[in-house]
Length: 468
Image (cartoon, rainbow, N blue to C red; front, side, top):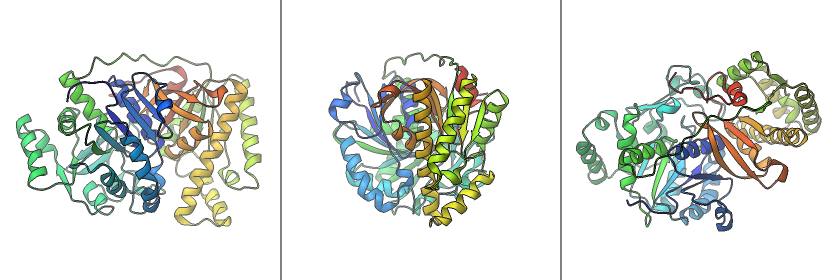
């Protein structure tokens, strides 16, 4: 495809932090990308000159199939009107999903009704993020310091509170969510010569009539081949519908770089150092728990929130006010502060909150989804009040579901990357309709993302070598 002006790629992220991850991968390749919270109207998009990729940060990961059927077609249709040759339904790199919640299979079924793509490429592996697919099985690190775990043995994902991942073979896992045929382009085929790779791929399309093609990804060198196969089928007149993690964008970027299809990407420096940082965390991941502990050892202060109080309508306002007061007192002493609802999966506050939710009439999955929404909105209110009263211009939000609720509370309309901070979690400039919060700097961090020193690095503007 010839290089031309206009939008190259549109995407919908099924959670917030994953959406910023895609923005980072494209921006690093030299593709100006803007992430919106709603499909942008022409006048909104017109504010950003030279945009080549447009994303919408959604919440498909928390939808049931019926909600997807009602919600996704309209959003997909609006993004299709941008005329991009490729549309990407972005999912978490740990493939968080089930037939009941966040069904990737149902999203594929909906997407195919909108786009009628000749096939659906599925790319989940992303070595830069510590995610690998081998013979269809997904492996993921638990924090960048750990070894890769097969997903059904992953210390966090196998016990995920909403979508526990008990199956590592993505073909088996996805087959429980869609009736479409799933073929595998395995690592051995990817290591063949270019001509043979093309031939095997065409055979999958012509003879096996593959509807979904899952690509293995073990090494960075595999990405360019995958990107070439995907981009070859992208078309302005009949957009290709792709699904996966930011591995889709890393594959495209590798192909574009190999063929010099795009201009040289810009050089991104390290973030500036700031005097103080505010962190709000709704993540119960052990990775985030270790990051909180390390930051406290390095001079951060903490405000341990009481989630049982926050989910109780009679006590929530009081808990929010107390949290803001404690944070302001800490910040006045010159320290940075972390406000958290739990610190790791064994935190007793989780059980206490569960009992409170049960007393309020919530049960099972409904309770888990309600807790994420209530706590996320409370953290957004707390952060908004702190930023308004202090004038602090940089903050970190930890937790995939938390991030979306916080962004909405801050009246954010769009985000654009300023610089990398850690793989998958860039430092962003926020465009907010709330005047005092416009142009603040935010990092949205998924629970599993980052080195142990993530929060310290966000304060000091340090970029770590991802390969260490």
